[in-house]
Amino acid sequence: MAESIGSATNNVAEYSGLIAALEWARAHECRVLHIRSDSLLLVQQMVGKYRVKNPGLQALHAKARMLVSQLHRVTFEHVRRDANAHADRLANLAMDRASGA
Image (cartoon, rainbow, N blue to C red; front, side, top):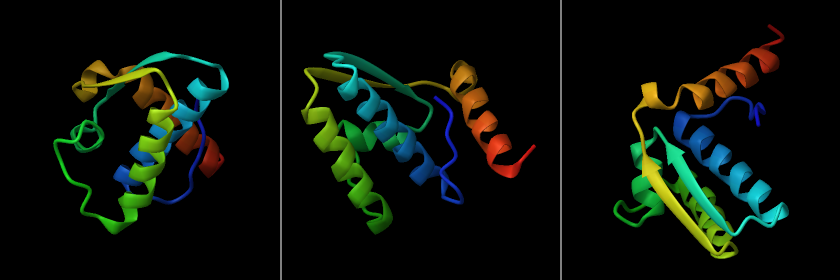
């Protein structure tokens, strides 16, 4: 899944990717989902260890939490960026498509 979201902060992009994945999982009736992300902020906010202080992320976080509640079991894991190379390639592909490259 590689889709441009236009100009956004990295945290908005991370949440947008999470929401897209959760919506896909819900549409395909996935009951168990394991999310791996190189965004420590996103993972810690989604598991409740960090508060969502940024007003720009609060609505995205609320939407993600609502989608998580509609699935049977969702777990989150923080991974180093170099261990998440495939996701990084997809993000770069989406940016290239958006810029016409």
